[in-house]
Amino acid sequence: MKRLLTLILTFGTACWLFGQELRPVVPVAAQGASSNVPKIPFDSVPDFLKYSPDMNLGEVLGVTVNSKGHVVVLNHPGSATSGPLYGNASTQLLEFDQSGKFVREIGRGVYGLGYSHSVRFDKYDNLWVVDKGTNAVVRFNPAGYVTLNLGRRPEGPDDPAESYYRGGRGQPPVHVDGMFRQPTDVAWDSDENIYVSDGYTNSRVAKFDKHGNWVKSWGSRGTSGAHADENPGQFNTPHNIGIDRQNNIYIADRGNRRIQVFDVNGNFLRMIHLNVPYDKKRHPVLGNLSPNPPDETQPWTICITNGPTQYLYTTDQEPGRLYKLTLDGKIVGMLGESGHDVGQFNWVHGVACPSEDVVYVADMNNWRVQKLLLHPKREQTQ
View 1 (cartoon, rainbow, N blue to C red):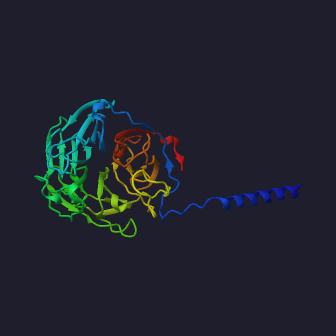
View 2 (spheres, rainbow, N blue to C red):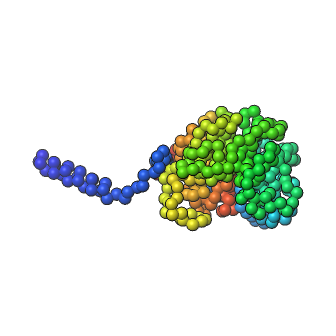
């Protein structure tokens, strides 16, 4: 009997080892890669916003939520005809109440709106709009009146360096205090200083005091080098910005595939990378399949929650996931993938996170806003 048991155990061990050898080889991720990150179960509410069918959304570039739960959507309908931009000016600011019912359009015809890139509410429920097309940052009070303008809109389309549509992105940076070249986003520290990611052309961070007076800037255009943690303080499309309660400033350095973190004086603190393994052979929604895609993916967005424990939410273009991170950069969960179906994303361009488990995404190329209800207690490890 003992001998029979020994044979059975030996045979079982051999089968187990043989089975291990036949398993497909999983490529080893780059050093420091985040493996075994849980997938957060979630529900999508794609039709949360209630509006008339004669005002269909176009490319949705931004979404933000105020203290009352009202949602403002930065929509590009493609139907506006005013303004000196090359081609049509295209910006709508649509406000919805906490139930998703349409309330009003804000800022129709305002001079600083041409091709806006992001929207944010501050703690006073002022709405800030960062306009890439007019090189302006505009503040609206809760009633809808303009109360501050930063930067200056060019007079007309005859200067090709000032227009996104006429090669402005390829022009060399020209750092002029108080002015922008295709800015992308805005955030505030605890002293209400204003920080603008100045963005596609200038590739820097601009700092103003709470009255809009110029303070300083830092950063320059540059690449990350062979590795995504090289050349701190250089940017390749600083695309989104956020600030935590400790006044750490987070910059989504999209083209360099990293998030850079600074203090309020522009001193570099650390890098954060989106380096969860993914299926590199899966075809992207838009674009060709890359023959050698990097391990780190491109962070497009920054949203920091305001609960007892703050978390950072960010998204990438491909594989099109939403990531939940601790503020020190640890990826604690993720959800979604690129695609056209409900619960999939096609270039998330803006994120609002009014609570840890409720997230709104500006699903740009799907022409919609999705409200996501996260269920982290049912997390599953990938």
